Picture 1 (tube, rainbow, N blue to C red):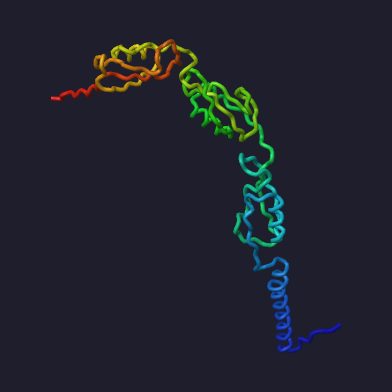
Picture 2: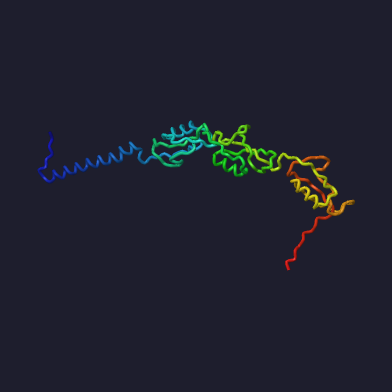
Length: 262
């Protein structure tokens, strides 16, 4: 067995130098050769933008860069492509090591079921807001004769009437059936020709109709302020409550009265 001589100070310093040299060789070999080799030290990979990709496209993009992935969550988004990437972490453009795992949120193919909120009797705008909070979509509006103007009277889904509380797929589009404010009650068109305009206005108002007036200047055979023509004509016609009757009045429109403030 070999022995190191320590009979002199020189031998001791030589031994110490050898030990220090071996330590330095080990130190530099570990930190500058082995460690960089085992961890790809100093090398990084840029994370690609995976949002909107299909699963196949995402897997190819990560395989090409020696990156891994894990699906951390699945959620449904109306209008989004099923089984596509919704979010990712780390975000695109980040620098990571080879083999780093990218955490993904995937859009599910099947929509969860949600309860249709009770919006019957609400205004159309209020009903749309409530529908939005339930993550449903308001489609076209169907108007029907009803006195409840701008009020939701029914809800349709896939062409069929549905009741509040019915379970339908999240993100679905429903149709509001809304009252037009006119109702289905009919009244006979009164004969206004030859009547004073102010009297005609009182009569029309009493029948829940709307009057539209136009002055046409002097008309032979009619006193100023008298109705000379109407649309629709009387003649036994019927119209809905709330409909408009247009009249033409002889003479000029009255000027506005100016009140003296003195």
